[in-house]
Image 1 (cartoon, rainbow, N blue to C red):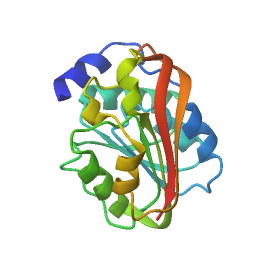
Image 2 (cartoon, helix red, strand yellow):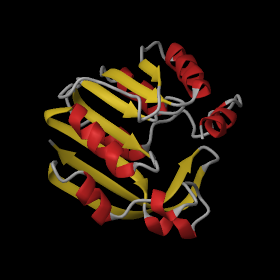
Image 3 (cartoon, rainbow, N blue to C red):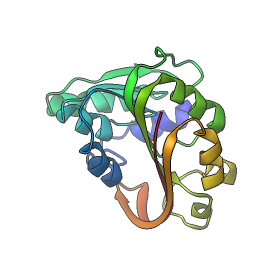
Length: 195
C-alpha cells in the first residue's frame, strides 16, 4: 500500500491539488485555532491551510513522498507542520490532546479501530470533522477505493463515533474538483461530532 502512495505522490504535480477541501475550508473557520490532527494527510493541502489560519498542525502519512511534497508546500507558504511518517497502527499521540481532528478521504481496512483510536486523541469538547466516500461511490469512477468495505455508510460511522455527541452525518452528491484523482460527480458522507 505504501508503495502505491509513494508512486502516486512522486510526480511533481500535486495529485489532489494545493487548495484545501471545500468542506474543511468552510468548517475550520468556525473554530478557534488550537491543536489539530490530520491523519493520512497526503500532500498537505489541508494541513497548510490550517497552519495559515494559526492552528498548531500535526499530521501523519505512510508515504515519504507525501511528506516531501507537504514540506515543499509549507515552505512556499511559510508555515510549519509537525508531520510524521507513520501507519495508523503505529501512530501514537497523548490522549485528550487535540482540539480538532480532520479526516478527509481516509479509507482504511481497519476503519472502526482507527476511528476509535483517533477519538481517544481528542480532547473533551474537541471536534471531529470527516468527509469521505459513501458506499454509493462504488458506482462512480471519480475517486476512492474500489472495495466497497472501505467506503462509508451512515450506520458504520454512527457506530465508530458513538462516543461523540451532537453527531451530524449527512450524505451528499457533489462535484469534486480536487486534482486529477478526485474529479466529477461523487457520493460522499460528511460528519461533525464533539467529544
